[in-house]
Length: 413
Image (tube, rainbow, N blue to C red; front, side):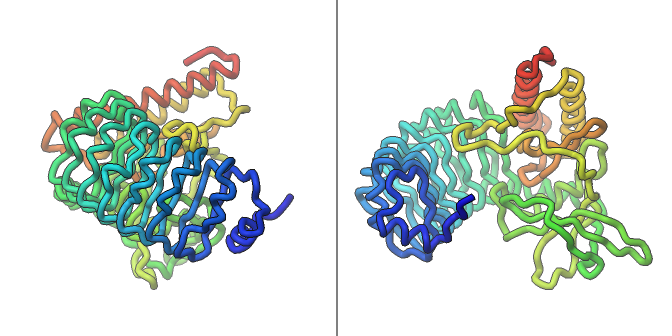
C-alpha cells in the first residue's frame, strides 16, 4: 500500500505537476496564500480541504474550479466568508469551522447547490437571508456563534433535516422551525433561554466527581469531533474497575458545549439501553473536561457509519449487514425505550442515528449525548413540538432498519 503523503509532500507534488487528474486534495502546511497550482487540476478537482492553515481569503477566480463540490477551510483565519463561493456552480458542501468569521455576505451563498453548510465556532451575530433560498439545504451547523435569531427566510428551507444552533445567544427557539416539514435532528443547548432549564434540572441531581489521580488511561476506544474515549482503570480504595473515559478536545464541540453533554449524561442516569455515567473528572492537570462511564462489552458493534458527503443526512450501512426481523425489532424497541427514558428525564437526544447505536445479540445501546438538548418542562406545548422531531428521527431509523431487513431477504419489520 502506498503511504499517504505528508502535507508538505502533497504541496511539493502539486507544484511539481505530479497530481494531474486529482479529484481530491488536502493541503495543511501553514499556508497564508491560496496555492495557484491548485488551478492546474481544475479539470478534475471535486474535493478541496484547506483546513489547518492561516488563510484569510480565497482567490476571486475560485469559481473556475468548475467541478468543485466540497470545500473545507476550517481552522484558518477568515473573518468573512468569501463572496466568490456564491459563484461556484457545483459547490454543495462548505465547511468554515473554527475561524473568526463575523460576516457572511449574501452573495457568498451558492443558493442553487448548497446542501451542507458548516460555520460552527465563529463570531457570527447573524446569518444571511440568502440561506432561505437554498432549496437543497439539508444540514446547517451554526453552533458556537453569537446568534440571537435566524432569518425568517429559513422557513422556506423545506429540505432542512439537521440544525445545530447550540451555544449561541437565543432567548427563544424560532417558532418557524416546527413548521419545517423535514426537520428531524435539532440541538439547541447552551443558549440563554435554556440555561436556566438546564440548571434547574441538574440542581436536583448529585454530580459524582472522580479525581483524575484515580484513573489510569489505556488504549483509545474511539475518537469523534468532540473528544477521545479511552479504556481506563479506576482505583477506588482497594478495588480496581475497568471504565471508559471521554476527554473533551476543547471548550466547544460540533454539537455544543462539553458542559451540556456532561449534564445531559448526569440527567439521563441509568437505563439498560443507555451507556450510563459514573461521574465527571475532577482535578485534571490541564483543566480538561471529561466523563467516566461504564466500559461496554467489547463485542458490541456500531450499527452504521456516519453520513457520507453524498448521503449528507443519512447513515451509511455496510453492504453486507443482514438483520433478521427479530433483530431489527429488538434494536428498534431498545432505542425507543432509551429515547423515552431521556424524554422522561427532561432531555431530547437530538442525534438519534444508527452511528450512535451499539448492538449485540443480547444488548442494544444508544450512545453520545453531545447533541442532547434540555426540554422546557415548564412549557408542555413547546416540549411536545420538540419531541415530535425526535419521533421523526425514530421513524427514519425504523425505515432504515426495514430496508436492511428487506435487503437481507427476511421481510420487513
